[in-house]
Length: 257
Image 1 (tube, rainbow, N blue to C red):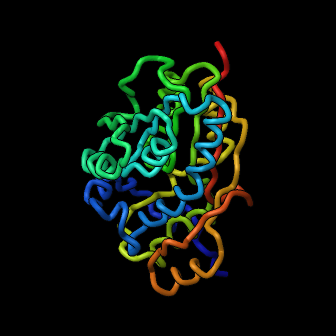
Image 2 (tube, rainbow, N blue to C red):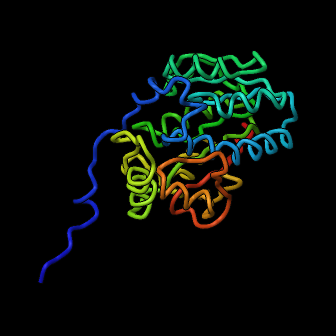
C-alpha cells in the first residue's frame, strides 16, 4: 500500500522573504496584480475597527505606535482620524512611500528594529503589529518590546496567520496560484502562529487578550474575479468572524503594574 507523504515533508521550510517590500514603491498603493493589494483590502476592514477600539478606550488623544508599518496603510488612516501616530519599519523604501501618502503630514515615520524599539517604557497608549508577526523569527521578542513601550492599561493590536496545513494551502499556496506576481517565500508556514501560542506570548508579557476574531476573505464576486484574473480589485473585501484556523485579529490590554 502506498502511503501519502506527510504535510511536513511536502512543505518547504525556507526563510520568509522580507526583501520584496523594499522594491514595491508606488505599487503599495496602486498595484492590483500583486498580493500587496490583499493588504490594502484587509486594511479597509481592519483600520476602522482598530480606530474605534482605541478611541473608545483612550480617546482621540492617544499616541499610537504601528510596528512594521510598511507602506503606512494603518498609520496614515489613524492619522487622518486624528490620532498621534508613530510608524516604525526596517525598510527605508517603504517608509518613504508611507510618508508620501500621509495627507496629514503628521505621522512620525522612523527606521528601526522591532526587536529593539527606540522608545522609552510606557510611551504609547496603543501599539499595533498588523501582518507583521509572521515575518519575524522571534515574534515573542517583538511582543516583549511592544509591551515594554505600552502604558499600563494600554492596548496591543495584532493580526496574523495560524499555523496548520489548511493555512499553508490557502494563505500560502492559494495566493501563489491565484494572485499575479506573488514572489517566492512571501510567507512560510513555520512563521505562522497558532492563536493559543500568541495568547501565551501576550500573557507572558503582561498582556491580557480581550478579543480575538477570525479574519477571512469575503467569498463574493470580487473573490471569484481574482481566481479568474489573478488581480485583486478595489471591491475585494475581508470580514471578521468564522474560525481562527486561517487569519485572525485581536487586541490585548496591558495589566496595570
